[in-house]
Length: 249
Image 1 (spheres, rainbow, N blue to C red):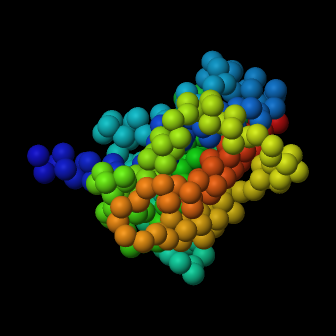
Image 2: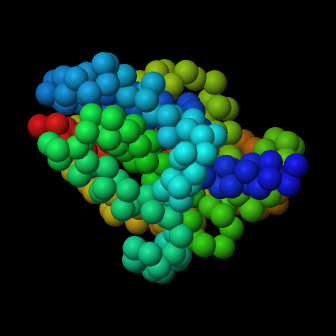
């Protein structure tokens, strides 16, 4: 029983966007892949549906053979600090670079490239969830106990899934919605950004996540944070597309 509790405790810390959020990121990215990137992904995986690949990195957490990957899903950058590899817990920033290099390396085995692609799809999404770049104090908001419309939960879960689920949209509907009316110049700029850039964005944006009164979050919290939530989903998808387009050029 104790081992089960510890496993659930660790698992909750490692989650990024929920299933729908990751699929939104994947679908946005898929819309912005070049034809060359699509063909290379098909050669590697058999299709280029990034939404359907986006949650594999969470699904394998029940496999003991992947337990060593537990600290790949997040990074810690305390307020006022820049990122220094190895100084704090979490390796997601290094892993984005590492898996990009695996995909670029001609000598990489096909299975290595398949896994690298699936991790990359997931991790670029994770970094855009502001609480996945933790402050080092509260397990990315998992230790911050609050209520969501009177239901006990924690701050991390609200950003993972509660706000997204409250929109009652499928991942394709949500992806199409957040892409509506976006300036193409802005989209192209975001596609060129690197993992450290969007990690620092999450470090700075996460302060907004903690800005609330009382412990029962509901409509007012959605009103204050919906724009940021949707901006991060959109940016995650576009940056994923930009990364894959550069790799498979």
